[in-house]
Structures are given as C-alpha cells and as structure tokens.
Amino acid sequence: MSLEVRLNQKLEEIHSILEEKYLENKQIGVLSGISGISLFQFYYSKFKDNDEYADKAAETITKALESINEGYVYPTFCDGIAGAAWVVEILKEEEFIELDDDFLSSGIDEYLVRMMKSDIEEGNFDFLHGALGYGYYFYKRYLKTTSNDLKIGYKKHLDYLINCLKETAKSHSNGIWWESVLKREEGLKGCNLSLSHGMSSTINFLARLAEHDDFKEDIIGLIRQASYYLTSCKNTDSSLTASFPNWVLNEQPENGGSRLAWCYGDLGIGMSLLRAAEVLEDKELYQNALEVLLRSTKRTDIKEAGVVDAGLCHGSYGILQIYNHLFKKTKHKDFKDAADFWIKEAISMDFHKDGYAGYMLWRGGGEDKVTWKPEINLLEGIAGIGLSILSYLDPFETKWDECLMIG
Image 1 (tube, rainbow, N blue to C red):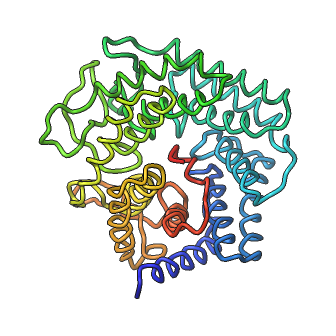
Image 2: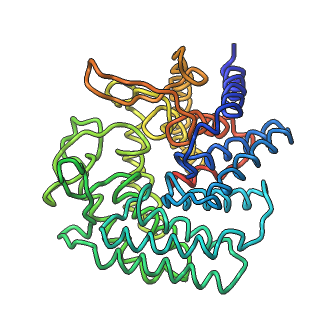
C-alpha cells in the first residue's frame, strides 16, 4: 500500500471517529477544545469536496458558540473562549462560514480584556494559558475587522499588552528577557525559552505585530533585544544534539538538552528567530536561526529526540508540520527530506489497539507508571494529526497552523 493511500485511509478513520466522539470534549478552545476539531472537519470537507462533512463541521463550531451562550466562562486560547473566537475568525477568513463582523465581539471582547489584565497582574504571559493568548485573538480581530472603530479598540488592547511586556522585561547584558514559572509545584522561576509557554512565543507574537506600521516602530527594539538574549542562550557544548536548552535559571544559560518538538526546543526557537530576523532585516540572525533549524533535521534517532507519541504538541506530526512549513518557506531540500522522514515515523505510530485511528497520547510517568490515553483534540489528539496529514498531502493552502504560531 502506498504512503498516500495509507494517509487517505487514516484521514477517513479520523473523520469517522471525530464525527462520533466530538461531544466527548467539554472544552471549546482551539487547541484543546471542539472548535479545533471543527478546523479539521472543515478542511477535510474541502479536501473531499463533501458538503455533508461541512454540515457536520458547522454543527461542531455551533456547539462551541452555544456553550458560550449557555455560560461557559473559561477564557484561554488553548481551552476556552479566546481560542474558539479565534477559530471563528479563521473559518470566516477561509470562507468556510459567513458571519457578521461583530458577531462575537462586544461582550466577549470586554471579558477577554479583563482576563488578559488579570493574568498580566499575576505575571502570566503564557501563550496557551495566559495574556499572550488573548493578545493573539485580538491581533486576528485587528487584522480582519472591517470596522474602523473596532480596529482602534483592538489596537488599544494590543498596545496595553505591549506596554506591559516593556514594563516587565528584565535587562541583561545580552538583551532582555521575561520571567515565568517553570515548575509551579516547586516554585521554580526563570526564563522559559519555549514556543508553547516562553520567550519564543513572545518574540513570535511581537514579530507578527511588527509587520504592521501601527506597531512596528514601537516594538522593533523590543524584538531585537529579546532575540539577542534568546540567541545568547544557545548551548556552547557542540556534543549536545540540541542547540538550545528548555530554560535558563538565575540569568545564566547552562548547556542542556531539549526534545525535538513543537512545544519545547530548537524548532519553536528557530522558527521564532527566523520570523524576528525577517522583520528586523537582520541577515546574520536569519542565518543563525536557519542553521539551528537545519541542524535539527539530523536528529533522526527517535529515542534521542524524545519522540514518544504522534500528536502535534510533542510528537511526530508536530515535527512533520514544522519541517513541511519550513520547506515551503525556504525551499531547502533538507527540510523536505526531514518532512518525508517524519511522515513515515508518524504513520508508523498508529499501533495502539485501544487508540483512536491507532493513536494514543503519552502521559508520561515513571518506568512502571507510563500511561496512555486516546485523545481527539487538535494539540495532542487525532484532530491535529489529521490536519498535519492534510498539510503534508498539500491539496491546497491552509491557515490552521497559525494557531500554533507556525503559519
């Protein structure tokens, strides 16, 4: 059986399971909730040119919106209202649905601004679960609203977030950085370098804003200083396979390993520095970031790379999605070869008899306490796996991976 046939069969399996089980997910956010599942369903309906599939997708996103009307209050990008509202914007942008421009905006926006300010007061700038996630939704609305008054309002919210990032940035001889909680149970704080929760997502977010004249002059220095600091955290021990550690303690970078994944490590760091280099027009930074990413393609020992499961967050399909994106962006053959390697690894992980479409999420634990569970969501489950397969098959351009700060 050819790889393409197998991938198409896998997509059909995923579609069938999601159609049956999507209501098992009680969250509504893009990454962990049912709005993210609707993204797969809409793109798959386009892939199959099947209006019945689109009807099911519309039912899924409608369920998410109904949950808000029925009192769902969890606000974050990953799990809650900000993520679901962001999905609505993407679905409108991709012309999957038609809604009035201010369909969700007024009451939801006021609530999300309050939540953003509350998280900022607590020092929580986390992309998935904090202030940056709200900012990412406001940024999408800023780009897409046709109302000048609404656009001014979104710029005000984003300016507030930017000013708070300026005020909380910590100075260092190599630039600036932001403190975050690394291990809550231990009270451990430091500089998280990751795309999921740390410096890379902040740089990535700011670089997106800097593509627009309304923000560029105000934040270009912030991006430069943050990028310089992040670059200075690079491992000096060339025997390590990872170019960067996960985080920095006591403002002193220490050589350390990191997995190959979307959530932590070289892939998210390299992509964010690449984006920063483009808005800074910094050729040296761009080349350094590209070298980090190219070096990562050599990590093909699955155990060494820390790859245990298949999901987007820390598994093989997330790695595939990043290399696939980088090949389309740079046309560098090494990224194409890496994508081809990881699609084969990813499809081979469908061996769990109790899984969904053969896949299960690894929950970790000690050697005698390793746990696995089937999962349907985008970040760690089969909805994200299906979206990554669609992107690899490349039938048309997609925007879904913007939710992971990839696209």
